[in-house]
Length: 85
Figure 1 (spheres, rainbow, N blue to C red):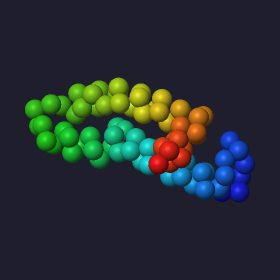
Figure 2 (tube, rainbow, N blue to C red):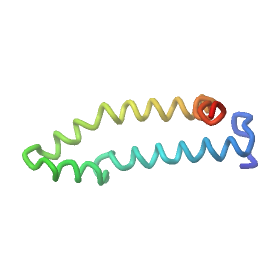
Figure 3 (cartoon, one colour):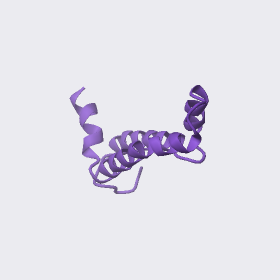
């Protein structure tokens, strides 16, 4: 927390890092080939092949990567809700 990252206060950095860490874990849960959520969803509908499940996740991965880039380069968006509430 002592690093000067985007000029944020240490409390703001801890909130920002927590949000960022949760987003990255969520991406890890749906990313092939290790994503456990993909295997759970595929077992719920056994008629659909695993490759179709992998392809179905791709739009979400693209939007998640865009969201991560936005949070990394504009951290004030993450902290906006905490300042309002």
